[in-house]
Each structure stands twice: as structure tokens, then as C-alpha cells.
Length: 258
Ligand SMILES: N[C@@H](CCC(=O)N[C@@H](CS)C(=O)NCC(=O)O)C(=O)O
Image (cartoon, rainbow, N blue to C red; front, side, top):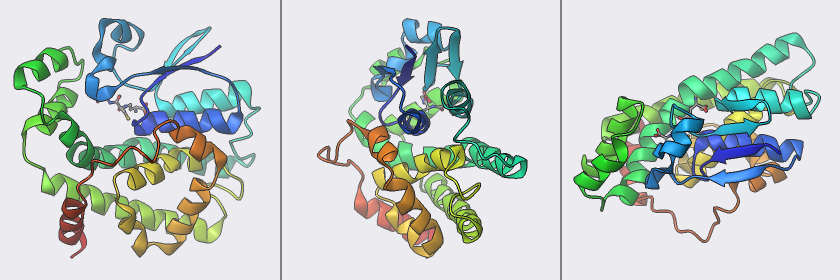
């Protein structure tokens, strides 16, 4: 049995859960809470010395990096049905997976930390924060948590992120003008990778970003209708109120797009 070490509110974990749901294989569930710093316990650091989620535990060893995990799952358990047959379309699929890892995920982090994590960590004393975060193997990541707990909202970082996401949506517009899904006419790992962005935009109440991109929005709606999308977000349910400050979002959106 494979075991997924993940967090329900982690973007990159969502990608892997959606892939597992598309393939339909059973998996062991080890959920960590990132704002409780479960990913920095000695036990988890022994499993993944980077102290990040997701990590997939298999009989052969532990795999990290969500795109690598998804490609492995599709190859090992799904006869590569989530990868187009055509070599160029497959290259396009890898492009989108890489774009999600290197552009979208970094862009999503400032809004996530400023709009979602900040209110959760706000009450934590600097001493307790230091106790928990000092084990982080990546000092720049530790710094992001410290800033979320105590620094003011970083307007400039969030605005830059909105513009970056807007640019990515323009690329989605272009892609789906030419084909039904991002890499090909068939649904692929590219759509799964980018579905994480769809989910996070909804979670952070940033839906107005889609307004400038009707084709991208239609693609995002097709993605969100898939049963695997719904499975991937369980059990983080709608009844849990979003701590996102709508007024702050409106102000920052106004500053980004005037
Ligand atoms: N490139 C890695 C990124 C993993 C990553 O940054 N995961 C985030 C959650 S989405 C995390 O573990 N954050 C905890 C931290 O920064 O301390 C992947 O795609 O798996």
C-alpha cells in the first residue's frame, strides 16, 4: 500500500490527491498540519529531510516532488493514460507541470501566506514560533512563517503574485483556444497540475482573477466538475469558513489591476 504524506490545504498535495483519484487506487493517508508544523517533527524530517509535503511512501522508497510523484503514479499504476501518446503533446504536458512547479506555485505562496496563513498564525508568540520553526531545513521558508506571524501584509508581493497568475491565465486562454485540455484534447497530468491553481484561487476567494480570461475560466470550470477534483479536496469542507479577508482582497486586486 502506498502512503501519501500530505496536508489538506497544500497546493502541491492537492495535485497528488487529484492524480490518485483520477487513477482510482487506494492510498494510506498521513495528513500533516503545516500551521501546527507537523512537517518539522524529527519523524517527518527523517522521512523527507526537506520538511515539505507531499511525500509518497512506496515499497521501493520515498518519493518527493509532486510532478515526479504524479508521473510515477501514472506510469506504475495507470499505463500512462494521463500522458498524451503524441511526443510533442507530451512535451507540452511536461511544460505545464514545470510551469506549475516553478511559476504558479511560487506565485501562489505570497497570497497564501498573507491571506490565509497569517490569520491562523497571528496569535502565536515569537518564542513558540521560534521553537517550532528553528528546525526548518530551509531558512528562507522559516522566514516566510515568521513574517506571516508578525509582519504586516506584504502588499507588493501579493500584487506581483496576482499579476503573475493573470499572465498564466493568458497562457491558459491561448492553450484552450487550440485544444480541449491544456496539453492535448485528452485530459492529462498538465490539467491535474494546474487544477491545483484552480482550487487555491477558490480557497483564497480570488475568483475575480478569472473575469479577464473567459476561455481559461471555462477550462477551470471543466476541471472543477471532475469527480477527482472534488475527491482531492475532501474532507476540507465548505462548512469551514474561509479566514480570507474579502475587503483586503478587493483592495489588493484594485491595486494590481486598477
Ligand atoms: N516542488 C515541491 C514543493 C513542495 C512544497 O513547497 N510544499 C509546501 C506545501 S504546498 C510545503 O511543504 N510547505 C511547508 C513549508 O514551506 O514549510 C513539490 O512540488 O512537491
